[in-house]
Image (cartoon, rainbow, N blue to C red; front, side, top):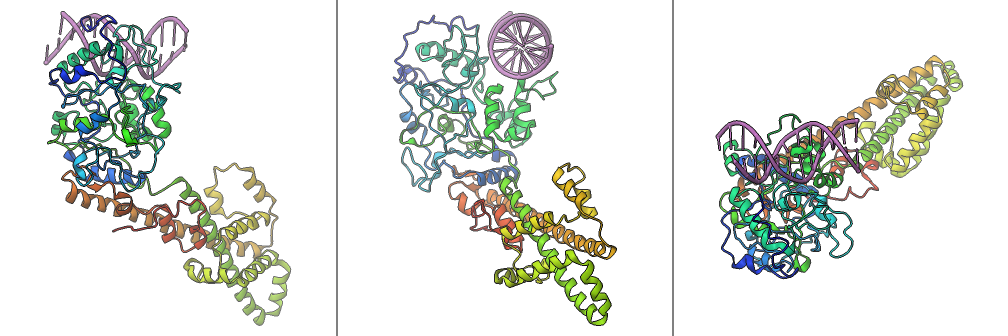
Length: 575
DNA sequence: GAGTTTGAAACT
DNA sequence: CAGTTTCAAACTC
């Protein structure tokens, strides 16, 4: 096997940080190494989809880094001395030394990384950082593995460790080798995948490439070019999680991690994480943890960037490799609504619904009150009776009156169609909470519908509350039933409206991306799926939930979120 | 932690 | 190209 490759631990160990002269001096390697290729074939196959996915994912990304991506040459220039530089234009795997300090890449979590440098000619600087602010993204999208190595000399927090015993870490069996990283701190034995054995390693790389030019390409997902052939045939957009080569799982049903398929594709969350992760779960697991943020799109590249410029590391190097065919696009699929609905939004929605419910109750109470007055005039007896048994309503009315005293509430009510404008300011969050508390305090019985919805709620609070409710006279129950029905109606209506808006946003995004891709696809380096990356946040950002809630809600209270992410993307929703 | 299973890589 | 072997991760116990 690697027998010849073994140069006995001997090869002249190139100085750790010194560039590997051999690389440059050696005849260019003929084979392409794609492993580092972050691009994805994206646009080639299903542009619309790619665009949409990319666009959506972008929303999650604070910013795209691609601007001014260093040209391969430039990039090489910045390679750390210690990192063997694969000079071959075609893209020898750039070894990412664990020793190298990992520079967090601003890369979007899921996204589409479009490393193409040319994109912004205006920014020739080798280490251009998008002027626009590239949020310092602490975490690199890369798979955990890479991240773990951050410490240069420091204690590597955690790292991936291969356990190779017989391959000398010079075969693709070795996770480190396959991913273009030096073994560092691994549990391997007789390891040649290190700076000291650079010569042997290079030979191994050459041999590997000779066997399979795509050997270093990610097997799954991230590399669009991975299988050019396959892609062509499939005409598919290699989304994250897509196996470039196609796995050959027989017994695992592709549900195990032996082939990554399960991890990258089948598993939802993981699917969005790093596509390029190798099949090993070590790479993957971490990504899962950060899937949301780090799109992990790619495995970590330890290529240090001077200037701290985030780079995709090896990526640029690969660019030259696939220039014509595809721009290096990495497409990671994300649901269109992925970035629209945030966890906090659910909370906001709940608040909103609570407010709506409270408003409905108040409105109902007010209405009832008026009716009662009319009745009183017509029937004094009826009025007496009401006074005797209408305790709960009385309190409700009382609340209403107090609320009416509040100008803010009045204003709010006017704006609230759902309540018929009867009640004014229901909208504040505090108020909503208040209403909620009142309900609980009053032991308000739950309507049948509510009970049905809570059928699985075992919360003692709810149950207790309900059980405590004393039986009330028929008339009151009837009123309450009506009240609850009204509340439910309002709540459901509001919820429906919210969903409609959400759907609308999703469609808008889809359309937008589709259009963008059509017009921009020409693969502008800075564009992912037709979406301009840098400006993206402003131009393409989709209204976030907040927006969605706010716009959908007629209840100000809901809109005011403490979460802050309401304000996230208030701006334009262009189209 | 040891042993087994699995599928990719390497080899014939 | 197909079949076999080797390998190391993934998995099970």
